[in-house]
Each structure stands twice: as structure tokens, then as C-alpha cells.
Image (tube, rainbow, N blue to C red; front, side):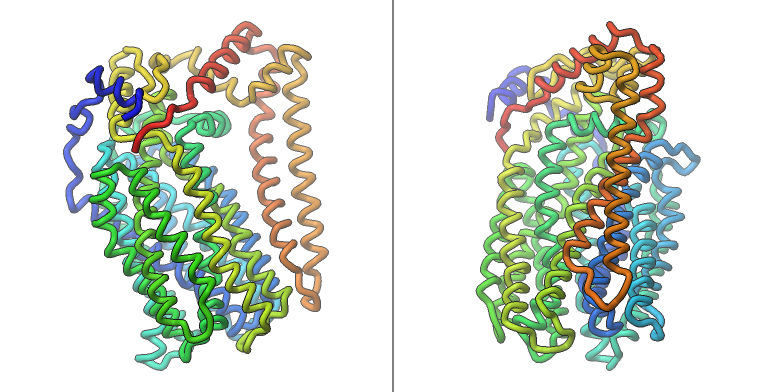
Length: 609
């Protein structure tokens, strides 16, 4: 126990009173978790089967597939923060989250079916366009329902351990759906002698309908907590700045972003590794077996990880799980033709570690949201969930697209024995790159500071604020006054449209400076985006040349630049208000002092797990 924990324990503020909330019923956990069965099942054919299906069956050049994936995922990532903000600001009879589940799930099911079933007449560039459009629509509608669904979880309970079990149930359904989707293609082809197109037709119908039914059942049965629905949310841009000041969240997000590379690459490369490195007699059947082993062992290990987390804490349990993924992934590099049994053992070994991260990280994220409420007085589940989703997606885009483009540039030939350099590239990308990223993610995750003792103290501080009393930040010892609704609070949120540097330049160089800063940054951002788009269009004007790996990176750059442009556009009107002198200079100086103090006090002490 470190000094922060000792102080809390000695002071008696972190007691069992914060776990008094009634435990969630099994019905609630099932209703909340079950929709993830269908949602997760859809991911398998999209990320595992579709790239190879479109490359080897539909005959879309790999370079164009990589580019289509990059474009679609960039637009998908851009929609996340907007959807999070919209959900947090929604006030309807059904609540903030449920209306979007009712709308998004059926639309996503339709897009999923279309993605899996391109018309047989489409070839080459036309098929790539079909893939890109349906891919974009799938992820757009996926964002509409999944962000509100994930944001609902932290609202259902604030109990430290009950959250772990809630997310464990959700991820149990996630893994179950993943297993079913993993083995289904092999079973359907072997037992019923179906072609690839027939298999994907059946899967498109089944999972599209299942997604709609399960989400409608959740939305029409499980009610949102009225006290959370009634709470005021915040402006989007200041919310972004305050979220990034949340040090525990920044640590957790950084670890997750780096670790997302370790998840994106194997998902895309496993079919290629299986077919062209291991070279089994029946690649489809063996791939189903490998996926079933990975997700199956992740599923059966969940109760073990829940017990471990209760005993040693969420962080220590999560850190232990890294070892399995790192060691299992690195050893796969040593495998070659005929090593199917060894690959299966290593896949299962890594799958045990995979199960821990599925539910522990969202549970830890929910604790971070409580810490945010301690300082802001607002509930921002969807906005934090959007961050959690958006930034890893931008990292995962090149992780999924670039490996495919690299194979194309090295001379990959569909449905043939590959050259030694292509085989080596597949082995290195599939095994070594994710293992390296997992090591980096582990080193970042070690710094996460919120323990059960600290979390109980955070909830106590929120209760003290509700009574109008000051609270203590349990990680830093800083005094945290209750947020004061009204003019002062509104001014604080308004000034958070601007960085400390921008406010200092405003005070030093004149009222027009904020507008100039915002316009300059917006112009630079849109310029980068436009130039990137021009470059991509120049590269893809003909199927006669492969667009190459660099094109996928440029697409990601265009998407990021567009997101930054939108961010600055939303700051233009506040900049004009600031330039008009609406906020006195002494108020700005006081705000700058508070920001500096918060940044200093927000550096958490290292807490034991």
C-alpha cells in the first residue's frame, strides 16, 4: 500500500459504504451482455475472412483492398466523438442510449449482409468500390448503436467489483459470438458443401437478424438510470481537453492505443499465416479450428480472470495477462509448414491472456469516468467511450491495411505458393510486430494508478460534492471544491475551448490572436487533408498500378487532418466571442492559474495494484 492508499485507509473515508448499491441482477447482466454475441460475431468475417475473400474469390487487387479499408476506418473513427457527444446530449423518453440502439442495429445488419454478399458480376475496381461503401456503412451504423451500448455499462453500476462481473458477462457473449462466427464457415463448408458465397449469405442473414433482435430486446426492456439521464453534459471541444487532462485515462488510453496494433495485425494476417506459412491440407477448416481455440480459451478463462482481479486488483491481473500474449505471439515466428499442432497450442495460450483484457480494460475505464466526475461534476460515458474507440481505430487502420499492401508490393499471388520473402514477411508481421507492441503497452499500463481503495475514495468525494462539501483527490491529496453551476462554471468550460498557450498569447498579444490561431490551424489541417486526397486520387486512377502501402498511410493522415480541421472549426465562434471581450482579462488569468495547478496536482502517485 503506498502513501495515498495508507492515507485513505487511515482516514476512514474509503469504506464499504460505497458498495452499498444493490448488486446487478442476472437478468440485467444478460440483457446488457447478450447483444455483444451478434456484434462480435460480425467482426470475424469482416476482419478475418473478407480481405482474403475479396482478394482470392472476388479478385480485388490487394492494394485497393488496403486503401478501401483505410478510407472506411478513417471515416468510422471520425464518427465516434460526434456520436458520443450526441448520445451524451440526448434527452428522450427512452433515455440517452436506447434510441440509437433501436435505430443503429437493424441498419448495421443490412450493411453487414451487403458487405458479405457482393454481386457476382462485380470485379476489380467496381468490387473494391462496393467493398469500400458497404464497409463504411457497416461501421457508421455500428458506431450508432455500439457507443451508446458501451456507454450504458458504466451507468448501470458504480460498484468496483460489480463492474468487473458486468463487463465479464458482456465479453463472455463477445467471445461466444466470436467462436460461433469462427467455426461457422468451416462447418458450413464441410457439412453442407457450401461455397464461400453461400456461406457468407447464410452468415449475413443470421447475424444481421440476431443483432437487431438482441439490441431491440435490450433497448425495450432495460431502463436507464434516471439520475444519469437527467445530468447535464458538456460542450464537445472543452470536453476533449478535460478528458485529456485526466491522467489515469491518458495512461489507460495510451496503453490501449499501442496494444490495439497487437490486435489488428493478427486479425488480418491469420488467414495468410495459416494458408501460406503453415500450409495445412484444408486451410478453411484449420482456420476455424485456430480461431475456435483462441476465442474458446479466452472464453473459459474469464471466470479465472474475474477471480484473480478480485484477489490482486484489476491492474495486476491485466499486467499478468500480457505475458501470455507476448510469449505466445513471439514463438509463432519460429513455426513453418506442417506446424499446425504447435500453432494451435500457442494460439490457445495467447487466447487465455486475450480474455483478461476484454473485460478488465472497460471496467478500469469506467473507474476513470468516476474520477472525471469528481473534477467536472458531469457524466461523460459516451464521450470517453468515443475516445476509447476513435484513437485506437486510427492506429488500427494502418495496422490492418499496411500489411496487406506490403504483401502486394512483395509479389503476393492469390491461391498460390508464395515466394520466400512473402512468407518471411507474413511470419514477421503476424508474430513479431504484435509481440513488440504488447511489450510497449505493458510498460505504459504499469503506471495506471486507480486501485479499489482509491476508487472508493473517489465515490466518497462525489458524494461529498453532492452535499456541497469539498473533496480530496485520493491520488494527489489536492482539495477539489464542488463544481458550481452557474456563470463561473460556464466561463470555465468556455475558456477550455483554448489551450493555455492560446490564452497566454491572447493576454500578451491582443484580442485578435485567438481567431488568428484557430483559422491558421484549421487552414493547415484542411490543407493537409486536401493534399492527401489529391495524392490518393492520383495513385488510384487506374488498376494498372498497385497503390502501395504508402497510400494507406496517406489516407490515415487525411482522416486525422480532417478530424483536426473539424475540431478547430468548432472553436471559431468561441474565439470570436473571446476576441470581442466577453471574458475579462483577470478571469482568464485566474483560469490559467487553475489549469496549471490542476495539471500539477493531476500527476498521480504510483499506487499499488
